[in-house]
Image (cartoon, rainbow, N blue to C red):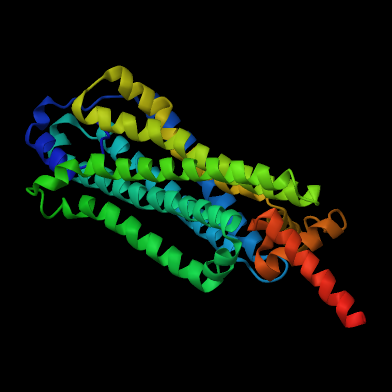
Length: 358
């Protein structure tokens, strides 16, 4: 049994010729090792994303539009890890089903695998779209700060998030339709269309970040505040790390699955069973860890969460630098704006103060 998990029409063709399928693609030791590792990774992914969402809710002050996007990313990562974990069910079924019962259980195995990959598509696509939103907003903030202030309100961000979920559902919908309309020709190409959409999103994100990088360094070279330049650059690097991680951990996983649709290779199967199948978990775990460690106000949320639970009481306190950063982000999400715009805002505030004193 091969874990292809893409188009149910392919499952039906396998089901009609199931007498050619070997029921023992892996031994019991390998399966138990896979179940153990996958369970640990899935549990860690669920814990870190749940704790991250709670920490974001504990951030001092009001949540900004950026925080909402990070919350949405954690939700997608959490459910993505659960959908990936469904792979253990068909692999257990194949190994622990008697050979004379394999044909009768193959359809159930196929359904489980197909639903696993459909949900994986849904949540992984949502994670990619969330990073796409972050990158587009970052680009607009640096190139057109006045436009950013208008479109990046929490109400608008909430609308963008809902739309991104609708798009993700539409992308994964052909996989669901294949269960009912397996004779439709376009469903055969669903396996190849959605990875292309994902790759297209990633290409756009990389291009935008390259443009942002050039503009950021050009502005930071003439900025008065070196600290503000460092904060903006750190935010840029954080987002870039998340995009690169998504590329590195998704492309091998998807490519191997598509290759296995057409070519059976015991070597490729073992590579998937012992390495490739764990890559999505690593990505789901990395996201909250990366933006949690590199985002100052989220770190402040972790501190407050720890203090409320008694873990950090008397050990960790918010520094004046952390408080000042949170005040700025709560007002206008100014950390995402270009340095020149930030400097001009500060200059206007100082001028207004002097005039009122006179």
